[in-house]
Image 1 (cartoon, rainbow, N blue to C red):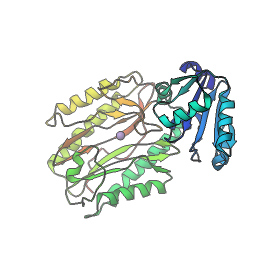
Image 2 (cartoon, rainbow, N blue to C red):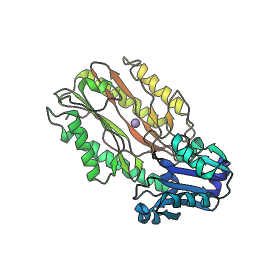
Image 3 (cartoon, helix red, strand yellow):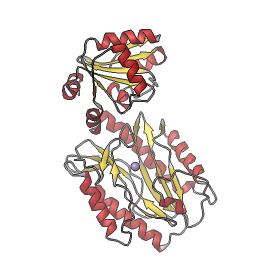
Amino acid sequence: MDAKKYLEEAQVDAILIYNGSNEDLNFYYFTRLLYGGIFEGSFAVITEDGVKVITSKLEEQSARKGKNEVFVYSSSSEREELLKKIVGNAERIGLNYDSLSLRDFHKLRDILGDREYVNVAEKIMEWRMVKDDEELNLMREAAKIASEVADSIPDFLVEGMREYELAARIAYEMFKMGAEDVAFTSIVAFGENAAEPHYLSGERKLKRGDFVLCDFGARYHHYNSDITRTFVFGRASEEQREIYYTVLEAQKLGISLVKDGAHGSEIDARVKELIDSTKYKGRMIHSTGHGLGLAVHDHVGLSTQRDLVLREGMVVTVEPGIYLPGYGGVRIEDDVLVRKEGREVLTSARKDELIEA
Ligand SMILES: [Mn+2]
């Protein structure tokens, strides 16, 4: 979308994004400066004639590789002058209230004076939800890295290893394949710890018969993947199999329902209905999925709490789970791109058979 269109839709004269005290992912969204540079303290200003970047000498070279007009400052007074000049006499200024700190807002208002400041956070998220080809290619690569690592996890398992050791190995393997970072602190849960969806990783040692639940992702040029696979270390019990294949069936159902025009809340309801029709009724204690992109929890996804009508170009996770406190749990998660007709599953790690490592 071009700058004019953004301003028209948001009904403002300019949009001002400050990558300040808090990192603002919208800075990367508008500038597409995805291939290097930290840009701390930099501005992206969307005006009628394009996206302008105000940045320091420290990242000038990276900034000039983009398609934006670049203004470089070497002191904070120069930065203020540039900001005033570029914003010009725009009266209605769009800001991202979700990220701009109150302190930074006060500083901005001191520089630009009394104008009309408008929250455009939700509007920007609407735009961000639908990915373009450049974004999708980065997400495909992020998904590919995570998928290949997921497929090799069974080879990394050694009796007695600790959860954080496996988390480190997963991160290392992703970096080795070109990830610039982990998408989030990986969740590696052994045995009974797999019963807690938002567990992290700890000192628990791997024992024969344990569930091994790994939920992790790769960040590739600022775009993320998010995958979960659950294995059993050694021979799986009947109960473990039953949990696994119930989750798998629910996950496949969820994926099959993703398409342009589908309601996220309905997909969540159908997936839970399936699990609730088994002896694991009530054991799926979170929603089926979330939006994915520059942020790992990018926007609302598949949830009965808040509906989202899926549109072509959105990426959502599909990740049902069953959790039995004191015993363990299974979650299976893939990243799914909404297509006009159907879907494209971006993550590709094996899941059709419970892997006994
Ligand atoms: Mn997820």
